[in-house]
Image (tube, rainbow, N blue to C red; front, side, top):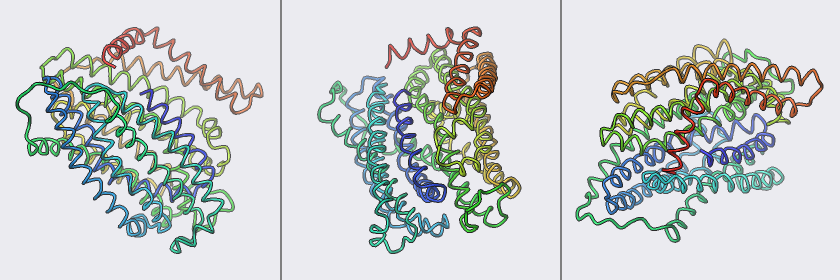
Length: 527
């Protein structure tokens, strides 16, 4: 979680200046490439890490270290080939994807630049899953930090260089007519190089890292059996991850398409050409509102990775007490992080956005209310991530895929119905409804199949503490604004006040001592 926070901070250092450089239309090229690329990346990478982690955890629990290494080597062999195919397909179809799928041909170069990430991501996913299966989260943590550093250092340098020399570079890409597309492509090349940096870190680990115990078992699984089990676990999870990323594709198609057809129901700043309005609104929404929205779920996603080996072991040993405790810790910790973040972002949205994107005042005005409407969905998504991992850990790997398909259907219908009347705000509402449905169904099915009982008192206390946090932050912002504080001063005082009140209320409710000490104790024993 700490590494994700660092990576996200570095990601903000990358995305925020990038948005300031590219603007709304330039970010639409960047976001189109990301939205088109992510389903392919998710299919080949996302399920793989969890599948390798689960198989490794099972082997290690039985002391079968030779089998764990064979799982790792088999997965590397298969999925490096899959990654090559995925990268080739993305590269070769980049023009077709951007032109016919996204309706944005200027994004084709950006799609091509990000295509090698599929290959690097597959290798990285196998290595991360292997170490996570042994309850060793440090390699994942360090590789994520390296990704963030390379992305910031290289991506911004390339984007700045391309912006200053865009006309010279465009000579080599005659199909590109907008200089902002060149800058967006250079920025996204930094993402590709960051994934290559993470891959190189694991190569270093192979050579110089601490060796795993040899293991003395005489029999190991056959490669065919390993391939079969990897497929049974990775494919459903990968497909469910594809479905998760379909929400971004749905936003791209429906926001641009509906606004092009029905027009914008929100005021667009003066000076934006009429033919650029759909791209400007979508780029502002994806580059600013969704960027802030995705910060917190990325952190709680690591709770799912961390709890997967624990739930797998408890389930395999039929240890109902451990299963319940680990489940409660993961869900309560997710809620403790997500609830105040959502309330705080909703209350302090103007201060946060003007602090992060000081040069993009027009884009902020377009998506300010949209960000607030996304916050209920952010809480639901944060809590859903650990549930997906836990469903996989108890042998229900196909359920997240089915649940996400249901949520995606809700999202698509919501966008089509709401965007013509509410513009991009409609996309935010449908996102929140989508993730609320996903959380409700996931929680119900996990309780049903695991047979455990969850206590809701902790969650009520967290919700109450979050409301107090938001109220105190709102009051602090009003007082500091009337006192003549600048935007940064208002934000700093409000966040500090809201955070202090939140922790105090949690302490009064007994949640800090009840769950915090358990979490600290377990993470100390099993880092």
